[in-house]
Length: 372
Image 1 (tube, rainbow, N blue to C red):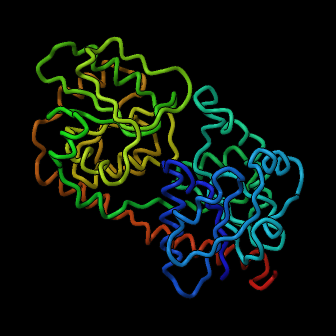
Image 2: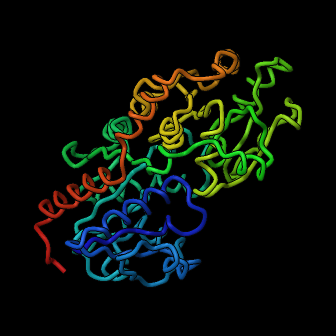
């Protein structure tokens, strides 16, 4: 197959969807039987794709402002994938928005429905999905979701044939399974010896204020850990840290793959108090290090974490405060091993293999390869 991928998420600082696009393209490119074509639907920064594309990928595409493209795709069936990226048998829109596929078989990944369920907690670009996603679903021969929970939400919300919606779980890089606390990283970042950590873009949907309120309620309790907040700034109201002593809060900003696993592995636990998620990669990666996880009680997090996390109401700081005090100083080795085994079942190779099966099904749906 000649597989086209929207590689726009690879540009800039790589968060969850960017990691998905990178790892998926990396594994697909390792198969010599297929040709993988990457394109970025943007004018700004598109030249940077050559620096981040995995080995074996072919780059193609015409530069065009993303805002103009999305405005056109909301109302029109132009410009098509073929015009922008050249001929492909299958084109996979990795980030919610499937352009008019033309003569390609179209596949789109819908990561979540936050733009509908938590409208006040997402940015303006995500709100545009209210119009772009329905058009993408109409164009798609197959639809991928990262979890069964999102697949159910999508089928409940849109008039989509259940046979075309396929949950494909994300993967965990093996580096997480090998991660250990690193005193050199901790000292360089100015982190304390005992801390809990949050990982993700600092924005309203992540609900970090609940964690701050929980720690503030503990006051000077001797078992209260420091808080390390990892992630780039996002949007919305700034996190109010006034209830905590300044010396007990540590913000690192964005951390790359060289430091992040060691920071998580060195924590007492990862906290994930989100109001809504489509998968939950940071807590799964934390399980791969063997760390404890406190997570919101959401169906998708129960699905992904498989009973290896403690689930709490996302807007109940008292419950989070109690759970923080109950975290053991040292975890049972059997519990740590079980967490690692669970996370090890999620691999990017399995994600890519299942995704390629989706491509084959999309081709059969659309009439086979070689359609130009």
